[in-house]
Image (tube, rainbow, N blue to C red):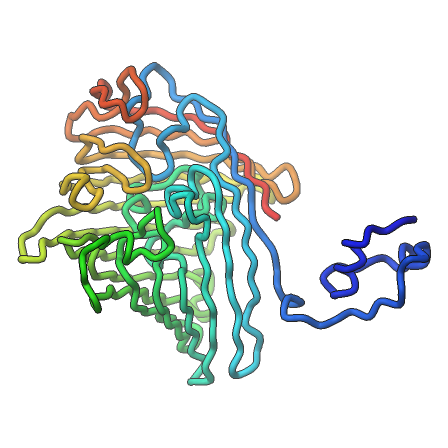
Length: 405
């Protein structure tokens, strides 16, 4: 059997392994000695996220403005393709590692803008201080929020309004310290508290030509986890986070997050809750806008393959206007339309059935209702065309299929 030279080269470097039978069959293979390289401990993982969405009725010019929703109405979608390469720290005192995560597609574009498909890229370094002090320098996922930007890590396919307004990434220096099995503290200094989806370096993209030589932002998250002595509630976690800093050239932004994951004595029954509050302040001290969201979560695993999840959320806010900080009512900086909505109730139900190996398959129904009486959804016309909305309610039915590798 002929083995390609490219494959032989990879085998010689130790990056791939060839079966002994294949080696014996090839006269072109010299004695191969695996070479230990810096890549030998690198892992590659990722996912392909797809969906099919149906919005009953007509008019999609003003879709509900939660993260990653615009442009998916009444159609089939490739949401995101994500590839992650990482080397974890080992157990040595001065261990080091790295993460490089590349993300593509409409959902990824709301994070990295598509021009720079680097979602995360950081070097991780451990110092032998106490239980081990970890540092991350580069671009890394934001700390706040009950939900992840990766839909597969959440109980629901669609995202909450709270997640919509939280920063997805930061560029800066992050320190993490775990004090025993209960307390974990993360704190860092970042360029901004606003994730700019058109640049890896948020500071330059956010400030533009504005000269702010040394101003930075603070990010933090305290996690308290119930120990084994809590019995059936062990693993229950409380999260308290605070970010503060410059969100735009003329406005500071303060973000407070409180969340909880409640593990119950009932096997496979889990609850969660979150509160997000965001305030924008003019640099001269005048209040400019606010946003808040309260959400509750519940998941119950009926069988090894079947899980039912639900989320209820109320959110309200008063906006600045898109020019000030891409924050107008429920307008979203990641490609969503500026929407006249100022208060909303959203209910989501998700049925997940894992029939295929490595595949998440979900069916979801979501209802968004403008509680202030505003006609905030619908409108017959092209997306972002300025067509006036004509509905107080939006209903969505979605099938979500994700392959994890």
